[in-house]
Length: 392
Picture 1 (tube, rainbow, N blue to C red):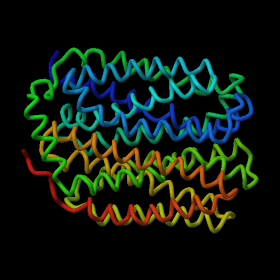
Picture 2 (picture 1 turned 120 degrees about the horizontal axis):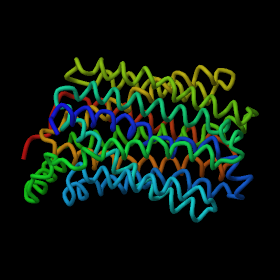
Picture 3 (picture 1 turned 90 degrees about the vertical axis):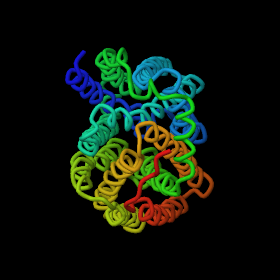
């Protein structure tokens, strides 16, 4: 297969992969009330269910370089997609144990997909990293927003929460179909020696820039997943209907559809990302404060916060894709940033819900998130400086 045809198939596959890496998780938040009432789950069980996927995002990310080392980049992505489809289908049986088990597999599969995609983009589109990253991030925002928005309405159409989750198996199957030809080709990582992998990993581990990126990625992820999983419950506690609460969450994520892409176009022209990282982190902070202190302005707060979330994610991915010196380093940096970053996010997401359970109020949860966003602002300044991880 020619290089140009491989790129076309890779781009189409990337579209469907992007459409399925958020909905299996994004659709859960609006369905929490149904899981409690229909499946009989407790708040503790729901808290575990909503946070365990983010834990797996962290743990699974560490397995990305290992899987690539054993199978090569392209075959590793195929295995990830197959595992994702199988677990998405099996969890529809229901029951807490099966929901939890399949959610763990889904989280691990998404984690490895998250880690592999920056390397796929770098390898397939080396001269268009920022542009393709913008497309990828935009599709993530579309799918996450759509999943959150239609979760409750589709569950009513199909008669249960199962229908709302089942529809997302379709793009996952299409991702497998279009990635199959790519999985039969060799990737750059396939010819990298084990010794080189080790040397590249050491270079990434030694760089202070790596850990600044880890902090920025982890803290912005904490805010996003805490809001993704708990905003509907917070709004319902304030008297909003489940449908309206889910719709507002969908709107919060929907603003990322144009924002993520436009930000990616802007940062293509920037060598240093410190200023823009601080600015968009300030948007997230402002939106959180409005939601917390001015309930009547919750729509405004959600929109501002949504712009912040939509911008920090592509910035963090661009840091991963452009701050490393080689494709192998990119995989290693992606693994560390997303591994530790999502573990930070998982802890924060669980604590956000647990503080609500322990105190009976959302104030402590919101205070925690505001403080973490301030730290995110500082880490974004450090991570955004015009520096690169040195080659081995």
